[in-house]
Each structure stands twice: as structure tokens, then as C-alpha cells.
Length: 388
Image (cartoon, rainbow, N blue to C red; front, side):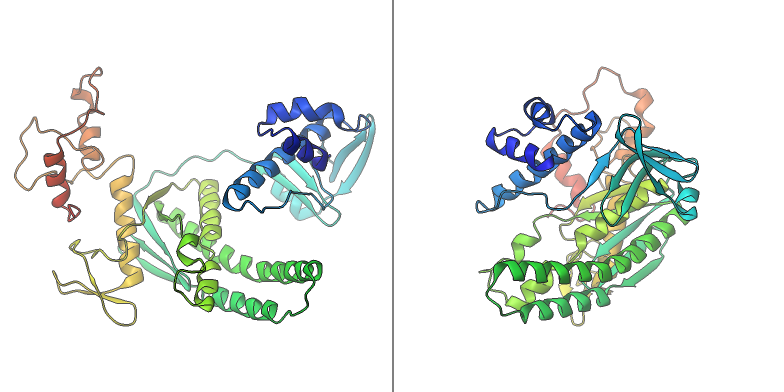
């Protein structure tokens, strides 16, 4: 059913769920229950969206085709007396026995959907979580071989991920030894070793992300990460980099680690904030001056003379960025060096804490989004070393 919906969507250039339902619903088998057909249409909509996104990047992208048998439903199922009941036809059911661990996890939770394959059963559930009131922030700097976390209460931790890089390097070497000129066999072999690689890497990333979120939850801190984008464009063929270096950098799992940290933080009620990645490693975390490269991933600040570790410096700057870009900014920030008059114009984002303090005195009809004086804004930013 998914492949029928995908072909209809491609032939008639449909991208929305509503139009795809109107065009393909009557073409699906009437012997199946209606909510199975609706779930197949929803799955096909996601496949079409990914296909169009890939086609914009590469015009030679092949048409999608679902090969794995899969049943996904949000309706009709029921967990009763240790069994998962799935309807096949009206008043006809199939029962799947659940183990004690699954029943214990699902007790008291709201089960949302079920996905059944020939080899596995996935159950999606949800729960209500209250966001923790943050008392600080933890800056997370993601690197190829490690993850460094620095909190505003001056706690620094480094998590080693060198084993992840070694595993990916090993599997790249194994796949490079394949010499047979057969695209079908190559795809099958690469898929096999890609699955093995993921099975080795995922537990390591899961362990690190779990420890980061657990530490932030214990100290009642929010998590701050860099907004990384366009990384893959930096390591394309023709950029003057070696093949091994490009392969090593393109295998960096920064997105997967971000995904795991984000969903675990939401599950625990921990706030996640993203800050711009520009100059987080180069700017001195003590005085804000631009540092110079030293040896062994060390930085030297010519302004204050401090020698800093590159990763720790970036983690501190990211944590400080969480204070600046959080919805409630720090109350101690000033916009100019001199003492401010009572009626001074406040700078949005820079004087976030003052805006919250003086909210009662501002007229509700006043527009806070009016353009501010550029000279005043530049002066206020130069106080923090950001005027450059």
C-alpha cells in the first residue's frame, strides 16, 4: 500500500497528506481495515517529503520503493492481559505476547502507536513532563573524538568518543577492500557492514548522551549546544582536502548525538537551547578577546595571557551563550560602561533581564520591536567584546 501511494504522489506531484489521501485512498485494497490504509498514506507522505528533499540536492536521486514488510497503526490495537491485540479483519485479531519488562515500562503510560515487522515489535508511548526550573546551564561542545561539557557552576567533564572514530575507520577500510564490479552485491555488502557499524556506535553515543542529560537534570541545569549547519559542505570533493580526511570528517555523528540529547532532555524536562557556533572556540572565555592557535589543541589569549584548552574554552563560551540567549537574560548585563540613567533605552537580548524587571512599567501598547539606534547597539556590544 505504501508503494502504491508513493507512485501516485510522484505521478501527480502531490506533497500534502490531504491531497494524497484523496487521490490514493480508493486505489488501496478494500479488504483491509481503513486505519491501516490511512497509516500507509501517512508513511508514504513522509517518504515523498524525504525524496523531494534529496532530489533538490541531487537530481539523479532514484524513485523511492519500500522493500521491508511493516505494519504501523495508531488505532485499533489494545494491550490486555499481557498480550498485544492487533485487528486483522472485523472481529478477527492476532495476539502478540509481551514480556514482563515491556509490561512494566508501559504501566501507567499512554501508548500511541505500534510498528510490527517480521523480526521486531516497536511500541511508542508518551508521558506528561514538567520543565525543570533552570538554575544554570551546561555547555556541550561536540568534537570528532570527544564531547566536552562545562557548566556555569565551573564543573568540567570530558567524554571520550575516540572509540567511535576508530570503529568507523575500521569499517571504512573493510568496505574499501570490496573490488567486485557489481552494484547489487556492493549495495548488499555495504548495507550489511553499515548495520554492523551502527550497532557498535549507537550504544556508545547513547551512553554519553544519557550521562550528559542525567548530570544536567541532577544539577537542575539547562543544556546549551551549538547550532551546527552546513558541515558536510566543508568536506566535499574538490575542496583541497585528502580523501581520508574528508571521509573521517563526514563520518562525524554530531547530528545523531544532538538528536539523542534533545529527546532525552525533553523526556526529563530539561530545557535545550541552541546558540550560534561562530567563534565559540576562538573567543577567550575569560576576557572575550580573540585567541591565537598554540600547540596540542591549546589556545593563547594575547590580551590576558591565558593558555586555554580549545574544547574546554568552547564549552565555557557555549554555556555563557545560554545565559545570553535564554528567554530570561541575566540581570547583571549593562549596555554601556557608564552608569545608566533611569530612562535609558534597553537593548533586546542584551538587557533581557532588565526587560523582565521593568515589564510592569512599560505601556502595553508600546512596540518593543522598533529599530534601535545602531550606534547605541554597537556601543553596547563592544562592552562584551562582540563589537568586532
